[in-house]
View 1 (tube, rainbow, N blue to C red):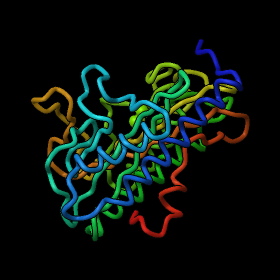
View 2 (tube, rainbow, N blue to C red):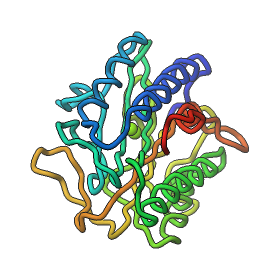
View 3 (cartoon, rainbow, N blue to C red):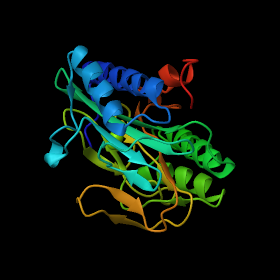
View 4 (cartoon, rainbow, N blue to C red):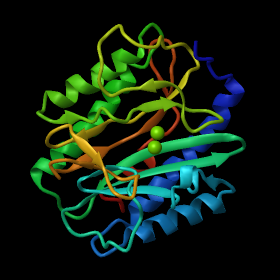
Length: 259
Ligand code: MG
Ligand code: MG
């Protein structure tokens, strides 16, 4: 049985969620051809620290940076590097904060300049699959209902769901129970209860679902080297409709950010 969060804990998780949401927008403002992914990481780390928080990914199991930055065929856990983004790339940015004893964790995939129609579709469908998952994150459902919602939507467009990684509970620890797979069967899995705080984070591939771990032991890449997208939000399970803690509004309501 997963213990739901108290309303006091939820407020602290909300503060973290807003900070990661704003951090992703700060990153989005500078995504452009020619910008290195190290520069994205630098902007995020500075913004997080300026807000009195700690970048929780840095040093987590030895992870070397504040952000996971995953370009094109890298699904998740990419290292920031000297690589300069180029027109037509997509860049998935995953951000974590630790503040007042609690965690924030959200991700967004940005297009770099103009992307192909197929890539545009991958971004739109992956984000929409996340919202389908959030719609299923209500009391009375189970984790399998979330997975089913994400999977059935994404696969209806011919895309595939990465199965090796999943969403998770969030609290004082970055990864808590229950796991939230992006595939599944309705009515199966952990029961969702009021006050449970979870991260839903579909990782959707343009091609096949198979992935492999790069030699650095972190980066997860698509086996067919086609693009992958990743969006993540933190929500509270509630009766009738989940309550979103993190938001993409800071990105999508900023006219200077291409999304
Ligand atoms: Mg994340
Ligand atoms: Mg996560």
